[in-house]
Image (cartoon, rainbow, N blue to C red; front, side, top):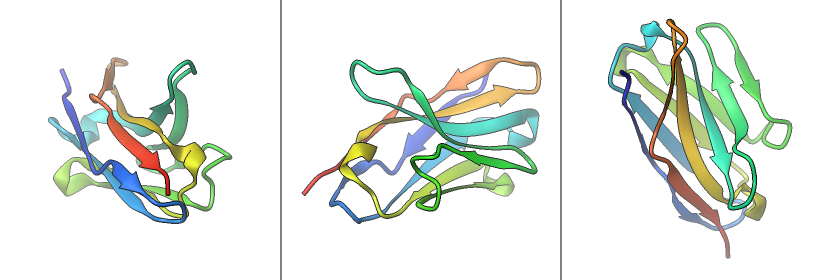
Length: 115
């Protein structure tokens, strides 16, 4: 079982920045992929960004504005979000896929971009 604890959400004005953090309860070396998804009411959860030991992947809507990174020593993954837009408003969820194939999710953190 992997527990994921997210932090860093909040209210920010358009054009502002936020950094989300996701701390895993186990070594992230036992996790093949970690990522961030987001969801708004009435819509499907969508991938924002994902990271493995060697690659990163971004949704087209966030390329050039968001950066995903990992700190192996802290078992933590980060999502740096710059130039935020109102359409980035959503609940953001941390995701981890264990080497044995199981998927784990965090509890979600609200990001609101509004003036």
